Length: 423
Image (cartoon, rainbow, N blue to C red; front, side, top):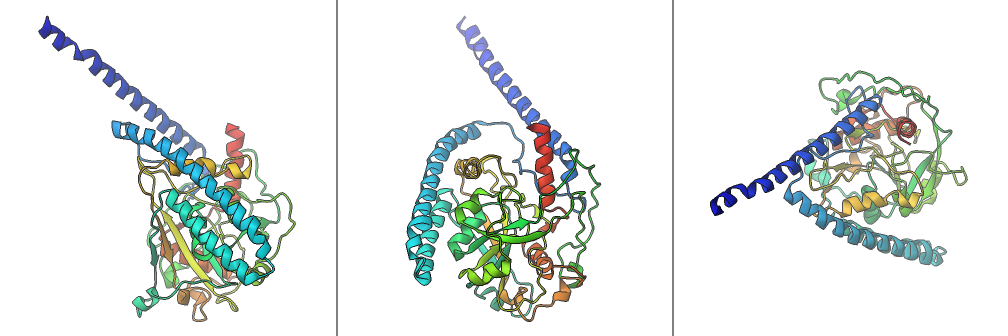
């Protein structure tokens, strides 16, 4: 009997484990099928020139849930609650110190800038460390073969009135820029709200172009066509926003404001800022897999005169089984201050350190250098924003990102169609 009991006893346990594994696989297959179904529904928002869907949230690779993943989820939940509480405390401290108490120093601009820069640096760094982003590797990418080491050692220090132009994929790079430069952030104000039909347009076939898409010289002059039926909406100006508001609006699309009061031209903001000005010409966030179409936000010829242009690109690693995506392509509706909370908790729940890579272009190779050759990057057609076009080409090169023909108007259409289907 003892031998029979020892033989038959473990069978129910093995069967239970087998059933649990099968159920886990079925759940995962259903999740994958649901994601594939949604991707099929939104395939109209895949760029036909590159095959990239810049508005979809990156997903980790599929796998069955193992014991290690179960343990990390339990630990991650508690860690996420703790870290999120710290991040909220840091945000409240920033609001109190920088946005309220430092207002008394506004009559003394140099002192106000110095004090706010110290507070911003300390609190932004503390927020990044709390999230598990301990170290951000920064690399200077130069295209010139002669004197390459000299260009890599060239300082990248924006001054008051200079422009910092970057791609936009999350609020993480906003924190990094705040810690490094304490710049002025601006958001675009469109002339009107995008107009689109209640039915989504038909998907277009993917037509990947062979050969180099991020070359130099004449190979880099691309014709980035608009692939959507959504008409382009001109940008009429910009508004200054605080660091906290910039973080809260990540993932959303213009118009960011209910009224147009306080709208100014970029040149007016740049001249009166007293600090560097950060511009995201994509006008909204993507998932970091490619560049959205740059809006004509500058309307400047290159090389520019009177100020310097600093080009940078941020790259994020794809999510894994133990690390979430740091990109924020899609925000959530509702009050702005609630928008980043779910993403903050998701990032804070990671038990594995997270990485971000920043790539900088030497100022001597940017559109602000008087030796910059516009003919290498722009066609010189009428109505072309040379600064926007050359910046998009340079960011594509240093970040090795493909340029898409989809813009912020297409993302607004994506939100509209999603709300019609699922809200």
